[in-house]
Length: 355
Image (cartoon, rainbow, N blue to C red; front, side, top):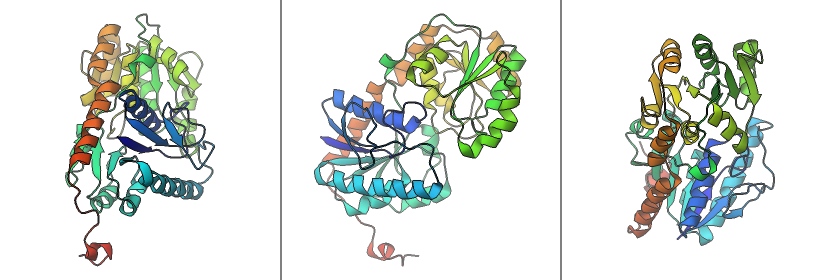
């Protein structure tokens, strides 16, 4: 079996810092290779994933210079990738909506992992491509797309790359995009109520600079609240591993949240709001606490006790890369063994004349 994995051209595979989807693609590609399955990763030329790599853009580019430049670069990369993969790959696995529209031009079957939160416009777009096999990254995400036939496959992590840290230091951490939907300002509020210092790590995207300046920066004092910037894998191990707990006070329907299992892999419990997929990932009382408010989160931080080895074991039993790869391989084989069905939409819909 030879599987094409199409990433975006903007962030390297694996990511040096920000990039949840890119981390997923890296984990999947290397897991497939360990299973003896050829993975061809369409990425940028700075990628270091341990699999065959192909690219038309040699350099990563993030953040984007302009939105228009980004859209054009994405389309060029995706069109080239699918045309190339269609010549010698058995199956093409895409990870963006823009790639779906090219599925009609090659005969290889497509899998599309949906990484984003629910948007009706995107769901309507996917409905126009029923020949694609869609996967959700959580049961909650799948439930928001009742008109799509989706298989849920949770993300998996390569636990060998994360160190269990039994000894914790007196601080909490927040790791994620510095953005309103991720709500580091609420993490600050919870940490202050609990009376425990907070270290914040993550990317400040230009579009959210004013949010950082107004809601986060005024609280930074280098003592109670500290911003440590973006972190790579080694810094992530240190930040998460030594922390008493990671705060995850999200304000949106989180599709998955890879950082949740990254924290658990280091033996660090997660204190999170119970939105989106979070209850599927955090086992309340074992690998963290599910909270309904900042006040409840602060109380849970000061009254809860967790065993680091048990936190890691809980995550490893459900979210290992091996489990994820097994499920994708089963899906790939099912698709390839299935008799080929109609590839195109009906002719009237193809012409745009359907009601």
